[in-house]
Amino acid sequence: MSDRIYNVLFLCTGNSARSILGEAIMNEMGGGRFRAYSAGSMPKGQVHPMALDLLQKSGHSIERLRSKSWDEFAGPDAPKMDFIFTVCDNAANEVCPIWPGQPMTAHWGLPDPAAVETGEIEQRLAFADTYRMLRNRIGVFVNLPIRALDELALQKRIDDIGRSMAEAS
Image (cartoon, rainbow, N blue to C red; front, side, top):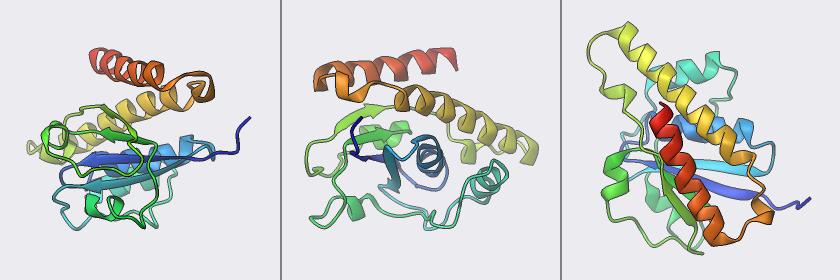
């Protein structure tokens, strides 16, 4: 078993909800094999309060979560990323920085729970649904036999997981 820790970056435009959820879930489910981060192309500057509330109630540490720019991860002093997941369609269509080390990338598009405006209950349900979808996808991902797969097979498998989980959602 490798002692290597894989760095994972979750990207979204605002880095206030979906990417934050992904970061927290991956850090908990990754079992020490994965270290997760999140960022946005146009960060809101604060994490959505419902995201923090849900994470805290689900037993995640929220101490280090903050809304930040993806520029923090594109510089020479940034941690080298192994995997980058876009979790919103806007971030997937934006021109991303050139990531050092050419990490594997995949798009796991999810609806934005922060965009739900029909009421607090509906928005909380949307956050819970997004949390569930991310937890399912991350659960499959962290259980892949990463060392046994070559890069092309892993990229295809990540894309297939994203597609199949989107269809099941």
